[in-house]
Image: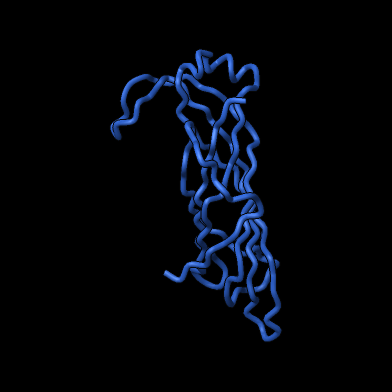
Length: 161
């Protein structure tokens, strides 16, 4: 598959215990900006993620088709994913270049109605939940001299503080 493993600019050590979390793979095709030269090869892909918005919504209760219990509450988390693609230019000097990208991605975490005897709505209103994004893995490959297929595995951890 010729995948170039990337790196993250933040701490990638996942929490030992995660009770409320979501994992998701975000795949996208990135195009080298027109003002940049063509690629000969990828050098590195650096990824950073930050939470920009958190919102609690009420949903249906029951079991999903996958068998997951739906409590009636989901925490919708907007994450800004910043990527820096380093590559060698397809030119005689073979200079190194960087292309920068930002993607806003919405993810959700199913939460129970109550945590430690406190209603989830009250915990959210009191700003007692912290959401930490982790970049678990990055895999990128050149599709051609102007495009890259990039996959980022994100892990969102929700904790009560």
